[in-house]
Image (cartoon, rainbow, N blue to C red; front, side, top):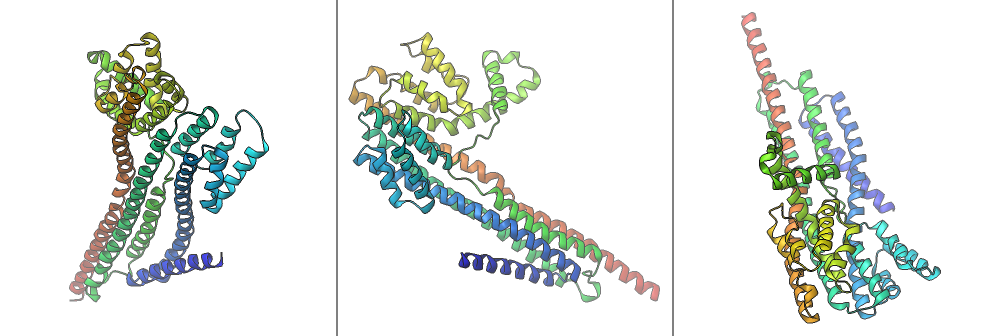
Length: 438
């Protein structure tokens, strides 16, 4: 604890020293330096808070990966949740060990029908991760009903490993964005600082009140911009968020369905909004669809296709509720036909997704070996979609934040323009004085 405090103190002193040096280079007066130092102290308080949040998110990610992988390895050896938890506890971090201990005590001390669901929810509530939930649901089903589980648990393991690798790469990309913003800030400060020393002494304007105010504001804004980007890029790596609101999703679906039925019935305003609505829905569907396919494929271990899809409905993301509900209704209308699969998401240009769903059609009619082969084919196709979906999510998250690296440069341009105006004012004033004196 003492070492941690000393490290924080050293970082604070370094930042304060850097800001003080910048203030002296820019020839700020005592009052301006005081304002910058106070701002730096405030910045340091919020910055340390964000550093702690970053560490918490990273620890949660690594804890979740280690826990899920160990649970799968242990469960493959002996399909018992209690034993798998004990093994996972041995390799976990202190925080995860405490949570697993609570789960184990809960399992050992209570005897209820849903003991495993209630106990494992303790971990789920702390680590809100879709893959962790899928793993828990699967091992609970095997614990209670048995069955041939090895192929399906390997699907989960492979998915978790690939997801972990993708997130690790994403974390590096986020760190690179933060570093680029910092480089942009420092290079802008250096460029603007040159202006002070390029001007001859007789035309110096550093004592002017406008210069002092603008320079102080610029230094404070550089601190604020970096803190803003750092906070923006503090991502909970295990949590998936829906970017469209539920109301907006409903509104977009209504518009897309209306356009599909009769495009000519759209008003001018609706036609302008249609392409945007369709594109946004397709983009969001691509992001969440692979997780749904994976869950359905795992449910097929004990269920028929229709039952597996119905079981998946409860925990669906909102954007898939409507098309899956329509699919279930079509199952009742066409219990043995291909029509339900053929009608799935027909309003959208999502050929790869539609093709994956149609592969479910033949599974009920196939034998065990052929069925497993078909499921593996679906999983292989789905892994490709997952990679594309994750890349899309990551690009969306980084895209906006990358533009923030331009903020320091914009501030620098404004600062140089003000300096140029001040230089012209001082130069003009000097010329006027010379003329009047002459």
